[in-house]
Image (cartoon, rainbow, N blue to C red; front, side, top):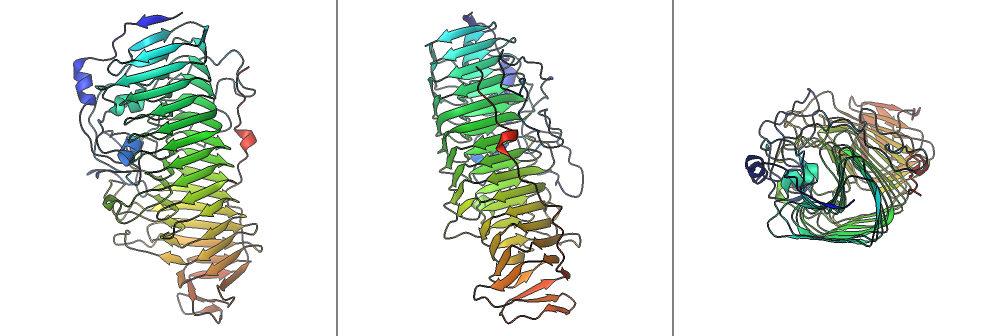
Length: 560
């Protein structure tokens, strides 16, 4: 049944809080958090929340608010849910992340390009009521509906109260000059074109066009579930992701065509409270500043898709969350920003301390496909535990590539932990993977770097203490090279424990000297380069390497 929703979402005081201006913080542009705690060394307690990380990294003007944990997920799945899904998240989420609201999350908001981190946010109550042009609270099928929405911070379509609604060829136009966007949009879906909060929306085809701040395309919040296939989505303004989950929402998509143009508007976007997303096929392009192709504070799997960020890093992942890419082509073009202390990257796994995600191990896994970086370095992790897995990814790096992997502390310019204590704790596994560029670590970080099944690395391993403060004696960089893999050394290197059953030589094929920090020579080489180690062994234990993920464990079938 279709009817006009007369609900009002919040009072004037709460709305005013949403309109407060906050500095950016996450993956794009940001300010610093004066009292932010670091992830390593001590427990983190976030008492104030900040603008969503993507907004922190993506945009400059964001309102901030304190999020509340959504109530448990009791939403019903569609009558014919995908096999093995039962309305729940596909596959097995990372340990400690079960789709519930994170405990002590990072910066609030979607991360934008190279700008994670940020200033403390204001406090406001969670949104529990929404305005909508069309509200659906009972099961039905809707064919060829056209909806125009022009109200301030309203939704065009809202599915709730356990309803299952099938939309065939839905056409939505969402235009509003005075909508505020900000955290109400990021965290709760206020102003989204289609919002499911306690019900299931099944969207077949159609088109969604949004020219409004906070005007996301498809949004699943709380107990809401969205299935979408063959839909075209275009958003123009800030805080307007293409597909979006938060507060535990679930969204499954097939062959979507998404373009976003505003700041803090990742094409595939999640935010505070997380959720689950499975994306199978399609094209997802984010053109705005601080708008990655994919911003992750959830459990997100993508297969056979094209992801493109023209003004940001390609992937921004915060805290205890996971991104998996299978046979997907990712392009990143992050600009050089002063706030990032001269660093640029294509994929970042970090903890911004904004409140958007729970503190814990972030995981980025990529099997097949390609990664094209048009500016700066490739993989960066800081102020968090992280694991990376790469398998047979075709990597094209920029001419000015500063590093292949950087696992270090940071100078806290963006509020990411405490300087001198905000290092990385990283497991990086390369499986049948070609790699080119330096691996950088520092004494406040821990790195276990595995090279398996014919992997190759051309570069140096460098101890860079520039962001390590006074340093520590607990950090390390361990390399594990199996018998089929090869390290081509391009400069003097420093490794803590080197386990090598493979080949180590320079670009001219000359053997490289390996000697202990105490002067003991393990290998006498004829290259000009020297690898300095604490210990060296030709026995290699790779049991700690990350295991290969399989798309079949996460694949979802479209409801019949």
